[in-house]
Image 1 (cartoon, helix red, strand yellow):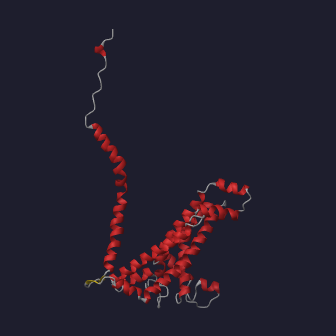
Image 2 (spheres, helix red, strand yellow):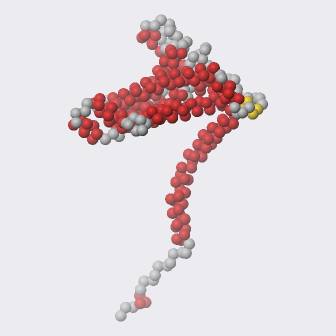
Image 3 (cartoon, helix red, strand yellow):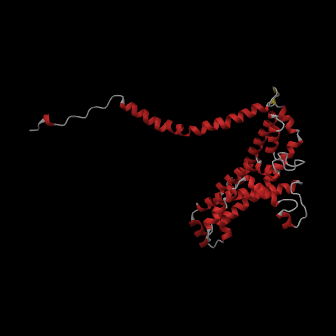
Length: 315
């Protein structure tokens, strides 16, 4: 006969509030924790991004001097800006250097990435070598290119057999010199992005194309380019933002002069904004220039996105 007295004692019942507490913990882990983890980015973006953006709008609606009165003038800064010949000259310079620098830069980066993706000796060394311009000081780059494009003893003038060509005296010559400096500095960066995207393309696609008799050139245009569409969109947008907000290279090319030459022949919008803010101390007008630059970047990025997303047949 079974001895009931020797049965093991039943486990104590859990506390009544343990199940609700467990449910609260699960809800916190699934719902609140993700927002808590990403909150530092949004906090920093709000403090250093959204607030300065909104404050710049507020300043642009005032006659805001550094040490003077601050008077509400509404849209007068924007009205004056649209009639300002110096501003439109800076817009022309910015767009001109953007076109001369960005289009060749992306094409060269694509060609360079395609070359680095092939089998060759010292391939790793060449891939690391394209990063050298990025880690080089901007001041050092400006000094070197200043010597290369010097009027009297410059290497470029010697190479082109031109006698005493002043590269800073004319729009097209100064645009070309600055664009070469920008291309040298950022082509390797875009090439590495394209190279990383190329290595993610399945090799089966190229093997199947080779079996079908497709040449290397056709494989490049029919397989590589469409598969690089996300990388091309990314580099186009980032290059557009960097090209339209160009500041460091032309300032260093002019040896620190934000006027962009004697006639403003290579003054960009960012340089014109800096000149009004920190040379003329007209913060309201400079803020209006900053917002016009922001809207111009948004507009060009939008059309660049519409153009690049059509690669591969996407409508």
